[in-house]
Length: 499
Image (cartoon, rainbow, N blue to C red):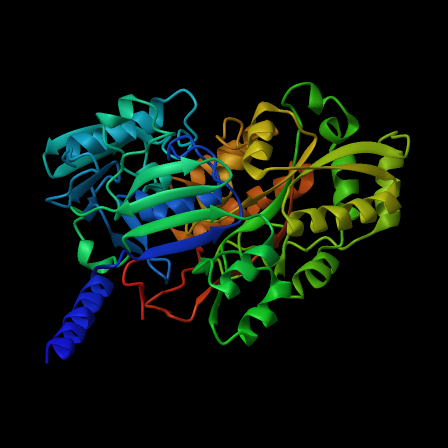
């Protein structure tokens, strides 16, 4: 009887230990994020981390409508110049500081005034932020702003703890999301742990979440299949069949909002002083040398959507009458001759150091060579690439944008004269006028007309060449349940759990 009792006791202890065993979710991401300061960062991989780390005023549903997060309700005044937001009660930041209207004011003012903030152009319409009471904030705008709710659903609306943010936010961000920051090892891992005082704690089921940057798509998938990772994002189209054939893996593919672009340096420092930067005919010639359909078939197995504009085909602001440029080598050569360019013309193209970006770059390199361009490919870590673009150390940069529900987020900051991510410093006052006006108009037909005119100006001056839209392909172990895919590609962990 004693032996039987011992066995029973041992089994009960083992069961108890299993019940309290720490659960860790490991997510493989394509790039190491840049700084973890939502007001200064610009990488998509950073947004993946923020989704678990930093709550926003507003979130985005899978149908691209807006949902309450830290703000539970909002309404506009009759003149469209005051947005009043009711804030969630009982929320604290990871360091214990209380979230309230004063914290919202601190964050929005910081995002608008920090010298190197990339949110300035997103919040350019904001005139002041006023505390009505602890749970109510009034955002005054200079003119009606149809984009503001969308901006507050992303990094411009992420809330940092005011007191903690007096120190270096990028190395130790203090937010109010379901998981809090523990550790970051550059190019290796970002570790978060469950925040026990989170307002919606019951919806989150992991003790730790670890983000692991792995640029090679095949290596990410191999780690998932072996069980060393639980979730991976940006699965390569060439790996989809392999992933779907593995009974231990489930695949989610959703039409995405994000696009890839070639940005040309037209006016940012010495690197702009070349025929590509100074003459739109040369940029048009380069674009005419590219076959977008061929890139889609060769690299993406036909799963991507070739495009020459920043809005996806399912957007009401996609211009169906704007033709997709077809490859025309002879027309490209003719434009170079008209511009007085001696061929071969040497140009630098910077791409990310992941296999897909390099493959796209190599195809562009080969195509452009036939038209008279000698393309020097420079592969670098993605956050470094963006930093160098911002500093003007590029001629052509191939960079991705993850997309936004509102069209303004996909165009304004990249091509307006003072746009926060206009790395090439292209400037056309007429384009600014159109895009600034589109921000103030709520009527869809009127906004369409403004964006269609803006798209034609971009097609004429070619400050950037849009290449394709990519679906959001996420794979995870089959023992995970509760995941809801979203066109923005972000991995929301509410209600996700191990079976």
